[in-house]
Length: 453
Figure (tube, rainbow, N blue to C red):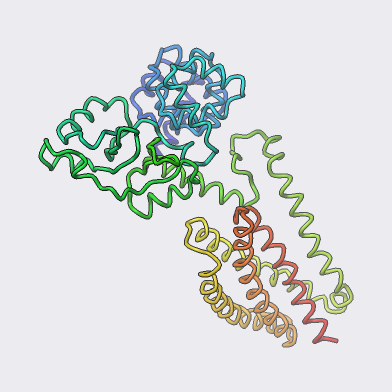
């Protein structure tokens, strides 16, 4: 839903709730797409969400429709709302969801409630969810859907079409038809276009593609997304160590994964945990952000220590105190630009130590060019402002040095973290900012101490 339309709907919804004209609200909501209802709920307060939930339950909304709405809501908000219901009310909603969506929500409930929900659900649905919960978080096994269509090699194209028609309510959108043997090993894949165009009596084994792009159940979801993106797939099959077909990850799940991973990396670069939300209370928000701020306080103390070493120089030349923050700030900007580029390439799997040498050389040339241009401009401005060329020269040279150092740090720190099997987004930004500040102050004040005395 476009932002203006959402804002208008929010305004009307809040008015309906305030005036308690819930019949009008119900009539408006049932005309909306489930994704639009989900967007609306996410932008309401907790109290308003509870009113909407009660309205859904009082009007006996179908479990299938509720499942479609809750599948679109952010998991933490969906669980918060579902926790308001009784176990016997939650279970039918989860049963109507795809197994991956249900597993995603159930994993966020308290352990006792998880057990109670699984006992309440239909046995076959509960088994699918339990199997997915056995896989690590953010793995292909956790995000795959068990609702897929697989047929044996000897099945004819005509029979395959019939099978697709009969299974339309039981599987997700059948982008592909997977071909298996008697022991459920993945043998090949057939597109729907192929099935329609060939003679109905043609066995699937004759038209299937045997070179199938697939992923292991323990593959990280980022790698799964990369496979789908690199080979322009609409879905990718998930197999176990024996090549038995377990499920599929479809392109709509991949879009969610990309959004989730991008949000996670952005939050990490900013020093915020990935489960942070604007809907958190002040106390919870403070608890999630304060540790990183305290860490930053400790790291910035190094900059203060460097500055304290040059107190005498600063006292004699107060102009230095005016100029030195700009040197550190420019280094931080360049360093974080480089970090953003490097983290993106590493996450996409496009960068390793071997290729990094070429990238580093190019980035160094860019930083030298930037340093020369910005250094000359800054130097000229300092000379004009303070009428002393020596300060302009020190200022310009320090900027050039710090931009080169920032580029080196912005390249090497993410690669080093990756080598140590740490998330390159986790601390790169903070480390680069800290070190460019330290080196920036040291370069500037050190040059000043050498040249002016």
